[in-house]
Length: 424
Ligand code: GDP
Image 1: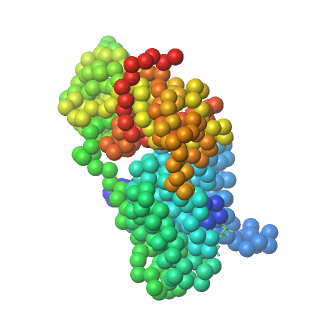
Image 2: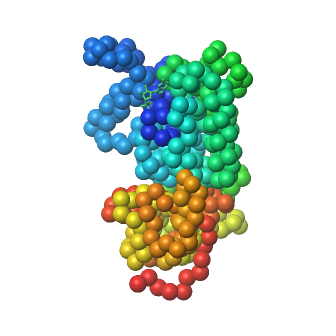
Image 3: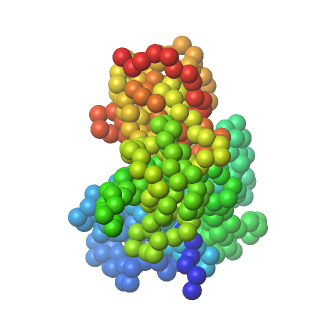
């Protein structure tokens, strides 16, 4: 049997609009729960004389996952005939950001949940804005709790119109809007008789219509260097340069250029973990290669292919970022910027404008960035790093900002600027 393709999806929306309930339903309706889990949770509810909720399934799974390790977002897996889904529950803004910018299962698509009874809320807008900024274009909107509004088509339509208008302003074209009830299971795995006026697809069908295949051919090669392993083979000192391929592909004999250093070398062998050596390897793989030449490079550089478009390399950048830190982001203060495998000190040189991500209003007279604000600004970095611009290769353009050892913001790079001054 051919191995199924994986697709990571982040589920977002205002608190209590029904994310966990919908995830619970998706797991139950695709028979993806561990044996006996559904009965066990129902039994616990019965013993405590409280009504069963699908959201409890997710809590029960989280409890299991968190034994021994700390997790801050649940990863659930379910399968359709087409592929295997990794669904990431992002309870808050920070988890949402982490799952989009860093981490092994980085989201490639998103489901946005809106409560039909409450309508579009601030966070429905903010989450939409973040998706747009980060370049996540595959978005489906679930209008949940349709049971609470009597499956009324007009209420559904009004929310569709209001939210479409907002999304339009931030350049998101949702793939579809689906009227659902997580609680009663409407239009999740099966089309519901209670929404006869809806002729569209179920959540599962929409997920399967998302484009998941990463095509190696259409983008330049990028591999941020994670580690360099030294070993000896036949008396020779060798180095395996390891990382995860973010875009493109390489084969034996290709000429690699590392940025920002500009060093070069020819691929001698490609090493796959626990597998036979390969002739070529492409996007999505954690891999390693050795070079003909003995060159000295370090973690944080980006491996690229000679002859393809080169990445940017500078220490001054124009960015779009959103700030989630408890303390506002201020000029003169040092932060860390983490992009790919590199981490450098960063500070604000200039706040160009601050944007309210919910109202879309702008302010050009601010000097600091408050919690939940989005800002366009110029950042000065302690040293040059390699990256791409958001409209070229999104994966190597997204970064997070660290304040006091914690992720406090994130964003994308719009422009590479020249830099004459040294870091002070
Ligand atoms: P989350 O915070 O977005 O994960 O929301 P939950 O899934 O925990 O749901 C919040 C509350 O809304 C819970 O009490 C659910 O039972 C309820 N809820 C979720 N989906 C539905 C629905 O489709 N219909 C109704 N009536 N209630 C729902």
